[in-house]
Length: 212
Image 1: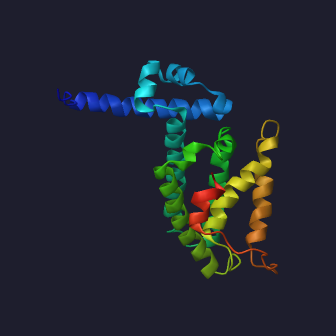
Image 2: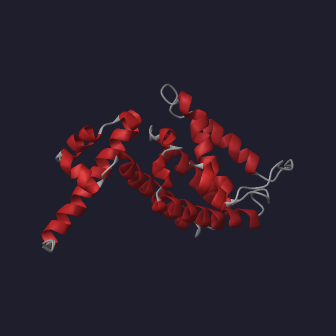
């Protein structure tokens, strides 16, 4: 027997429930890390636990969806900043906002290395983010604001690196990441740079191994 067609009202409810679940999950994971349970997320969303599993059969599926939202947010910010006249200020703003978003999410460091990052949509979104950030970085290189051997993939990796450097301090010094961001920005500038001892990473390497 064929399944009954979904009505417009049912589709609207599904979209609404998915949004509620993602918002609740993002808040729960940001506060408690990956220990947050699916039951707690359902309770936060005001939905039955079964609704969670209908949308996201596993916690990895849910983490992948949240990761996609973050990647889309970062890519959108980078895309908007491509229109800025001052490429150095645009790159600084992107990195500042990016690390701040990661620092607000306790689960981010815990997600690195999990199967959720192997989802094809997540891998595609990481590659797309690198392309957009490369365009942002290229403008800064062309304006002589940063050293000529810095790539967009370098910048994407540095966002997570800065966050993870400050992560042990976040409980008592939540703004500590700003110190390491400033150190990183100094290293990107063109004044008397040292030659980098290793070739820049490639985008396929980033999606295949660096984040998984």
